[in-house]
Image (cartoon, rainbow, N blue to C red; front, top):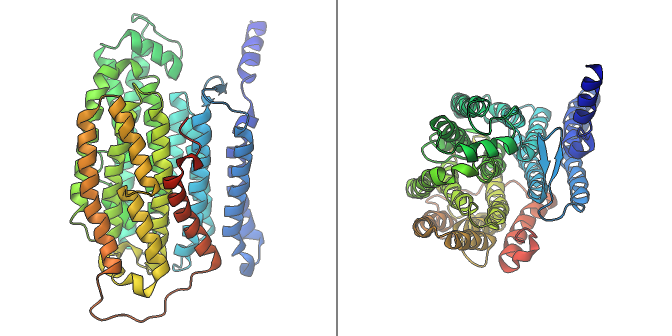
Length: 501
């Protein structure tokens, strides 16, 4: 017995290669190190902590890039007894989350300079979320998925309500907490149903580790008509749809986006959405692939309604943070079309990632301008606040116009290429109805995106305010210019982003 146990432990620990998740470990050490730095640094030197957060993550990004050089397309590496799998897609997403976190820390500097709030804890939570999302997209086991997902969600509970002196932020935090807990419960219930069914020895393909994606995929393929399996898969998809803000699970988005601090809104809009879609892609093309005949009609209906709901409700919206939330719902619909296409078109997975990359560049450019324009009560940003911005702050108005143009899908900006790739994948997959709905959604979105641009360039304030504008430092111009330059370059030369194989 002792020999058997020793052999099992050797086999188990042989795959526990901690070097494989060294970037996530480095982020955890960095997050803890910042808390320690706040305790030992003199008060006048604590302004170095945001720089430590950004440069520390830049170093981790470099480590990820160097490690990614050894990964080739289609190559899969499994660690920790199959709980983690690393592929070229997880490599791209690790870079994605690190870039997102660095930009959010930059936006946090702007926001926190206008608030009397704890600063170090903000950067600590942002980095912890980045590490958890990096682990989330590498998950190949439901235990790993749930632990990483809850780490992300719990940290966002705190960040959404971070401005404790603002009633809208506290309200947003409470709504996100209640609905986030509900979505986690739905997801967990779905996992339990799949676990119970796959562990039933009376069913074909029953598994001893029915939470493993690989073993669950085999079981579901053999039991695709089982009612419990279908219900479990549906609940798992519903739990993920809460996270990405897809209809009918989108009700939290406008209120949370408005009430949360602008950097947190940006983090939710870009990184959290991206993590949700990679999880959805992994599940739909992996363990749940055997249910494609059942799931495709469901996902198609959700995608179509999500596109139309997000775009139509955004048309009359005047609060810009709510507008970004509603437009983000529409973008979730476009991305879901790519997820459905990925079931039959292999390269559609990379089209989704490419779209997420263009969405990152454009969204952070817009949120960067919003962070600069907002005052201490940034939840109340209305379109009227951007009237005549082209005269008052021409640089910011130019950045905003490029970001919104890319989100609308106007050539030659990156958002146009991102939508083009998704639509071509949908066409090749035969999703003609969803393609038509997507085109209608893009046409509607042009109205409200260009309505915002119109406020900047063609609407004048009744009583022009000549208050001195907050200065833009060299770092601000570098970050915003880099985002816009990336958007333009991707639109002109898509190969700048080496994503589409």
